Image (cartoon, rainbow, N blue to C red; front, side, top):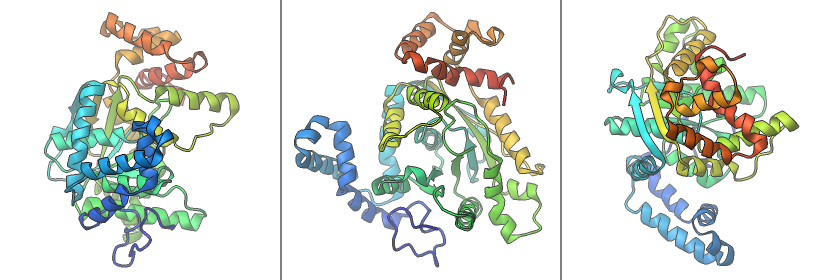
Length: 393
C-alpha cells in the first residue's frame, strides 16, 4: 500500500495502521507546527479570507494567515484540545447557518459502548461533524471518521483531517493485490477500533456523496468490514462477525443542501456530456460551501444496532437502508420539489407546508440556472419517492 498523509517514517511493524490511522496526542505538536508554516494551506486561507491581499501582496497575506493559524492553535497539545477548538466553530456554524438541529435515538445507545455508525452521505465534512457534535453535546467521545484518500491530495488537508480523528479509506491503490491488502488493513483497523480501543467510528454507506439523494448501502462495504474477522477466524458465523462491530445506521436530513447547485451541475454534465470534470480545488470549495451555506433545519437520527441474525452482506445493506430511509426526515423543501416536478401529487404533504416555506423554496429555486433545475429538484424530491417505495432502482 502506498504511504499517505505526510508519514514517510510510519512504523508499520510496531503500529500496523500507522499510515492510515488518525494522529495520536504525541504527534499533535509537530503536526500543528508543520501546518502553521504550510505555504499551500496559508495560500488557501488567504484566497478565501483575504482575496484582494492574496492577489496583490501574497507574502503579507501569507504572513497574516500564518499568524492567525498559530494564534488559533496556541496551547493545543492533544487531539481532544484540537477538537474543542473546532467545537466553538461548530457551535457558531449551527447558530448562523441552521434554524434547528434535532437529534434522536442517541439516548437509546449505551454511552459506554463503541459503535460503528454507518450513515447516508450528503456533505463531505458536515455529516460526521454533526454526528460528533451530537456526541459532544451528550457528553460522549467523538468518532473516528473514514475519509477517502481521493480527498487527501494536499498534505495540509491530510494533516487537518487526521488531527480531527480521520482515518484513510484507500481508493487509489492500483492492482487487485494492492487493493486487497489495503482493504484488509482497513478492515483490521476498524475492528480494532471498535473491539479493542472501544472507540466509535463513522463511515458513509457507500463511496462518495449521494448527489441525487438516493441513499443506498453498498454491500461491498459490509464484505470489507468483516474481512479481518474472517481472516482471523475462518469458521466465524457471518452474523456474529457483523454483530461484533455494533453497526448502527445513522440518517441525516438537511432542509436545504448548501452544495445543491454544485451537485446539480455534476448530474447535468454527466447526463448531457457523459462525464463531469472536477476542478482542482473543488472538494475544498465544497467543504467551505457546506460549512458556510444556509441549511435550514437539520435532523440527525441514530438507529438500532444491526443484530446477529443477518446472513449475507445484502441483508445487512438492506437493513441499513431500511433504518436510514425510515429515519430520514422529509421537510417542506422535499415536498415542494416533488410538487414542482408534477410527480406523485398524492405524496405531497401540503398541510405541513407554510406560506413562508413556499416563498423560501421559490426564492432558492429562482437562483438555480434553468438547465440545472430538473436535477436540483430531483435531489429534493427523491427522498419522498424513496420513502414511499416509488423509486425505480
